Length: 230
Ligand code: IPE
Ligand code: MG
Image 1: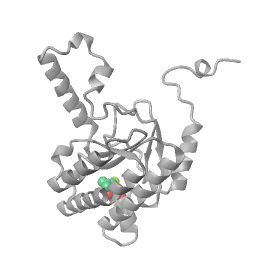
Image 2: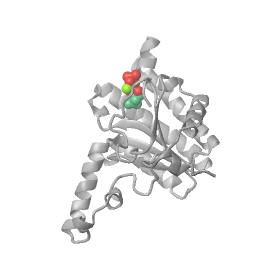
Image 3: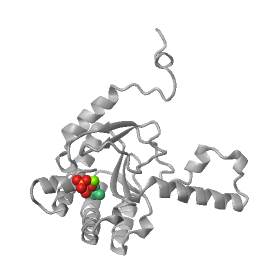
Image 4: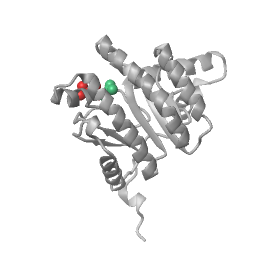
């Protein structure tokens, strides 16, 4: 979800106004995802690097997040969407943590639809945390490094239990991954759109899915192997 700041700047508005509009887009896309049958939607809401921003912007983002969680929990429950988080959420402000825990608990019984919020998330810290957790298992004698596999390590990633993303969409014209699900998106289709996040809409989301559907995913195999002659 990129481009909130530029959206605001283009209109001579403060950056936070862009973030406010961005929250509206979040609601729209959650609705659109459910309507198209996408069962897992991950939103990169706050990266581990976003703490570098001016304190006023960080505080405003935290307040928006807190309000979003408070106002949207009922909506998630009504829609039977289970909330998950990835990232070092224990480092978020207490007020956000409280709302987060409430929302996680209120939606914990749902199994069909999943909304994953990446909060204070970064792939590198995630991998470091997973490696440390795995090392503790080795030290405790429960894991043998000679038997290590991606699957075993992935059990310690914060996405454990969640499927890998099939499609990653980045808005705002930047062609970067920015520390997002680097391992999990190893075979994801990437889609970059110039649209700024506040202008992104359900129609564009559906168009992205249509483009995704037209791509051939080979996962290292050949085209012929995927479509053997009839
Ligand atoms: C939203 O867009 C991303 C968040 C961290 C919430 P930006 O705030 O990065 O917008 P730009 O890149 O400055 O336009
Ligand atoms: Mg940005």
